[in-house]
Image 1 (spheres, rainbow, N blue to C red):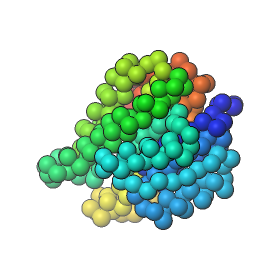
Image 2: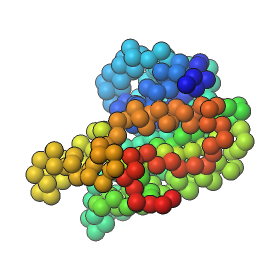
Image 3: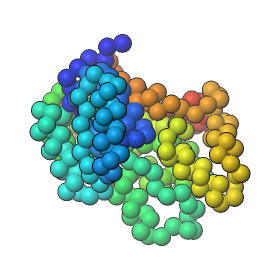
Amino acid sequence: MDLDLEDNSALVLASSSGLGKASAEALAREGTKVTINGRDSRRLEKAVNELNRSTRGKVRGVVGDITEKDKIKEIVEETVREQGGLDHLVTCAGGPPSKPFLETEDEDWYRSFDLLVMSVVRTVRESVQYLNNGRGTIVNITSMSVKEAVPGLVLSNSVRMSVIGLMKTLSEELGPNIRINSVLPGPHQTDRIKELIEEEIEKGEIENFDEGLQSWKKDIPLDRIGDPIELGDIVAFLSSPRSSFINGSAIPIDGGGSSSNL
């Protein structure tokens, strides 16, 4: 299916790896001009080179920490300047530390809020004037933890829900010129999953990586965790005119692993 995204302009935050990178890849495959972002310049450069080799879009990178207000403004302005505008914004962020509630400090909560919520607030604020062109879209990559709490991830379980409330509100306030949706990924083959499994091994909760991987997929009817590009394809679809009547939705991408009815 042609998603009609040729020569559109997109910005994907936190996209030098994982689900953000997969989303950038899916957009670039459609011929979209894509700016990707990350804090590590070497990793970012590697991702840019990989995506330019494997897709037909023009991909460029901007180094920056999305928890820094001024840096977000720079990222958006540079994207618009280099790509001649901005049609699609994909917000994404790494997960906060895994720990139980009683081990958290105030600083953990403030950092998590800056990372997961304020990065979205600030980027949307800077982007709206460019997205307000009649075809603008925003897709937020968050987590299935907004529907079902994940043991040990109290920060993610709690803070990410704010983004869903924000996205739903913005879908009403910014329509009809800008459509806004969220995707809620379950387990995918990313560095984040590897980190969580390694933490479980260090705590003595499991013996090895294979055991950890089995535990992540055991409740998924498809008997596997997701490939990041499977989520990326959904992000590209939601950014395209082919999804023109989807707005204000939060869509689980979890292989059916959730027990939630909604």
